[in-house]
Length: 173
Image (cartoon, rainbow, N blue to C red):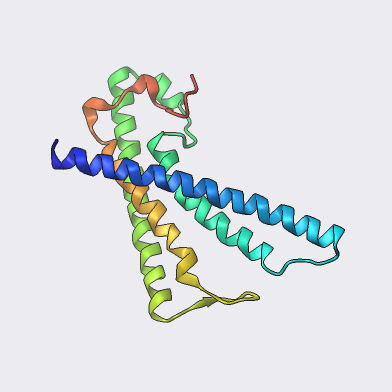
């Protein structure tokens, strides 16, 4: 097994771990809402932490799930262009789409990572009931963009591009 295949397997494993962690974050969102509703309306005891848990978990959930959605090509796609073009033209259009995805996600990685490092260096905290170091929440943003960038780069194998499966998705036809 070559080093590239090992890297692919490790990246896929990390993507799946991110998927499951995103599911945990979604469960935290659900649980915090349920607890907040019951505590507030049945016991007249609102919870200070519920809103913050939802906000932080939403950020984590979004950017932990992003690489998985990219990997499975589950992102929103307007496939009309690919359907109208001849097969080779669609293949080129898909390749350009993947290249642009890699470039823009890479740029977003750079910006968000730079900001996260700045937050760490300057010890910036979120203004909340209980201050939390901001980098602990924002670290998920460069992770999601970086991993998605790697997936887009892996899609750039021109021979492996299948215009008939342009939209990908989660098993949809």
